[in-house]
Image (cartoon, rainbow, N blue to C red):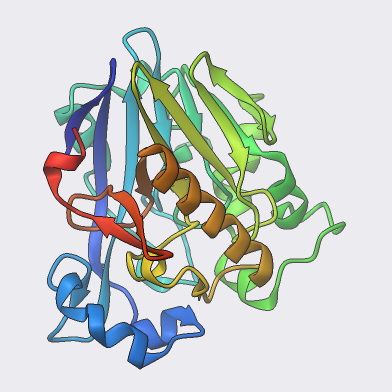
Length: 301
């Protein structure tokens, strides 16, 4: 499911990386094996590696082609980046730009880049290494970034202190993937209510980070919510109170996740998290007071 229609727009999935990441017991706060086990067979092999016990995840971007605008949502980890906080994403040499080309797009075709938040694996391809340092990967794009995350991650701004985990994980990210864009006057700072274009807007889903934004795309009779790290794995649809270890505000992260699930279940919107495997996007049903994901590709169209 690397290309499909949503109303009158076309969605393209651009993959950067895939692999085992962490066991669920280490990934989720509030993990309870009694709540995981009833669903484990549902997750293998697309979302969980039975042989290793690791969650199977992806780094991927979504390109929304409206016909008049090409919008890239989240930009993965990037190449050549030093990442002592999460070494698995450091020093990568992936063919992300070749995959973008295979989908029919050159970096210069992108009009807008939207980053849901400023974590290591959502901003990496904002920049590429050049002889003069880091430069914008997408030379004709504006970069729409969450203003409330700047206070958390900008080394020159100490007004908001990230958690110790967040500080360690995000070491070096602002310096190589955000600051060069600021210096090149490429950034548009955004908050909830920002309109990317008619039919596409951003709304707050804070908790994972202070400024985390999701993007709502409405086209004809269908809609999609691109929600970044509001969810990392389908188990969080079954158990919305499970946060990742990387969420900054635990209570707010749960509230945002439930609000997103409520909207998708109520409206039938396509739910597009950042790291899902399988068909990479799901619909959500609510039955007997509980949410459940619908993975069938037929439900995506």
